[in-house]
Image 1 (cartoon, protein in one colour):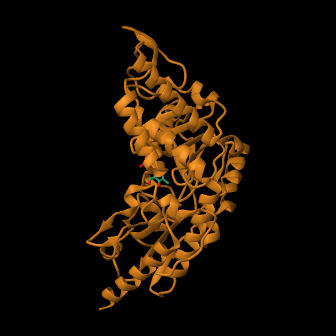
Image 2: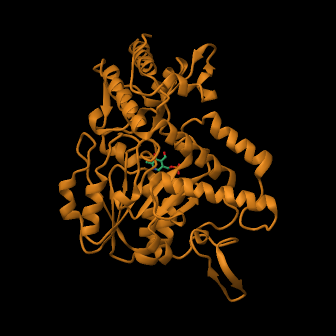
Length: 415
Ligand code: PLP
């Protein structure tokens, strides 16, 4: 592999913060980890924060008067403030800790949806949604009789915005849209969609699972009503994520899960819900994962999301170059200028799983399958794809390795 100069990031130095990235697999092959859209790796600082919390700071939050519980509660609430600042929410209680993007979207569908959506009302999605932003709305439709409409896609995997005029109606209650497609990498024009939705009197939920980790998010500037994301896709642990919700909306929504911590008072006849954010955090929350997520945010702020975005753009351009060297490879989604660091591809006559297996034998970890987006694959005319997805710690050399491994795989499949 030749060494290539890249963006402003000192990637080699950043890589040394991630113990797992020096792993060798299948004997002596350096791990080339290109499955970051599924989950990212953790730097030592995140691991250390969580270890220290378990070793020195751990107790249940919001319940004890004792010293350790107060310490743990302070750390947990400080973590919430870190997330608030990271996405520029107005108030920390607009951040609800959940187990991840899926749980955040389900919270909105159950709580806001059941209270505000009825028979004949409309929810507008797009044809590129992850199942996390599709199934909860199907379930809402089953419960309420509402209708789901979809913004169609071009063959290149861009939203057909011209269709919006016909899709909005006075029954449109919510637009729920992915910021960055986890398959196509398409970066959607959120500002336009949100403005159009608000003009039509609808709210907007943004599935930001693939955007918050990779570029600057400002919920006030975006004017989003809800925004959902996951800790494990942004250097944090699994089991933690967040829902941002506009204060006035969260205040008006009924609690979703019932149990400890979410009540102001309870008696045998009923209960009075707690104030935000506790109203939506029933039971013992993911305390240490929240601290891990905040440590991840701190790390990302140090690296700088503009530089992250720029570096991933270079990786994506390189990936398009190396993958397009073979006529048999079809890339899904738009050109690199319109996508984030996610490149999905199919090879004529080769199963995506078989392809991923042969790449893995050469040390290259990519994902294969429908990536929880079956309708999107159907729209692209395929049942599955292989997906390489990048983070700032990936190098141009690793993308070259992907290209070499693919060429080697193609030679095997051609035999
Ligand atoms: N939305 C998108 C666009 C995703 O890529 C994913 C995960 O891959 C999710 C939602 C679900 O995230 P989680 O599994 O962390 O809840």
